[in-house]
Image (cartoon, rainbow, N blue to C red; front, top):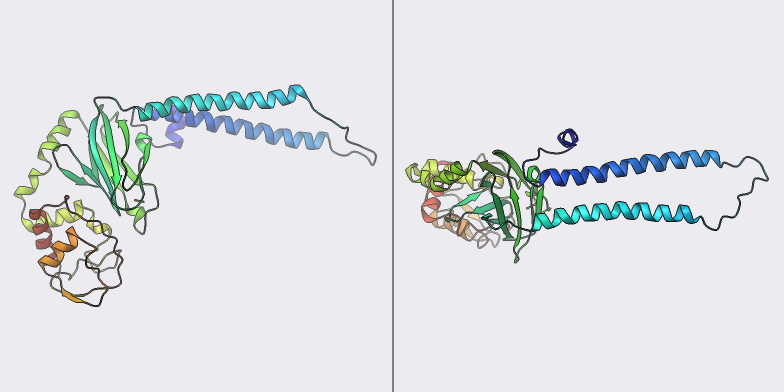
Length: 313
Ligand code: CUA
């Protein structure tokens, strides 16, 4: 079964992966056996009971108890096995262990935000310890998204105005890809993140130092780093090409035409407002789809991003 898993499915990197795959293989294998058996029976019977002559008349068959019981009972047994097995998996996936480490997840068009216990926020990077249950408490700031880590075999819808949650326990360190699996607009396919699984100690070190490195950085360098870390480039290019949002190239200091005809010079205040309250002013020809970075970026970080944007002329 493990060989089959390696061939058909992503690597098993969580405690539930093996059980989930076993049920998947049971359903697939049973279906293939039934498909082959039924196909062979249809072909064989249509040959065996073909019309042989003009007066070859089909006898009237009212019923066949043995046959009817077996075609009812066998599928019933199969369905009950799948139900019981699936229910056990479902209960396991919805019963969060008491000592689970909690991370708050916010889905936005089009990025994933991860809020940790110490207030640190990472975008498109989920950091977790290995061999410890992790519970994600999730919600969306705008439309429906869906959080999916194939390596861990966990997936859950992320909704506005409601919390959903899931849990997993990673069994090895390394990186796993996170997808959004609910079509949520133009850049849905770019709504990717990475789960980084650390040794317990390394995770604690990461958590302690995550925000601290920024303090030593030069503002322009920090700004460039923040633009990349906060997934700004999903929608804003730095080379003049048009994505979902206006390009950053030549943005600072330029005259912008808004969708209401108003003309604005893109100064520090305009950029600050566009980061914190993005849909107050919309540039002509674009849609009001940018999520707010209020609570994600602090003043110092916004200053750094402005410093970086000034260099893109
Ligand atoms: Cu978010 Cu698709």
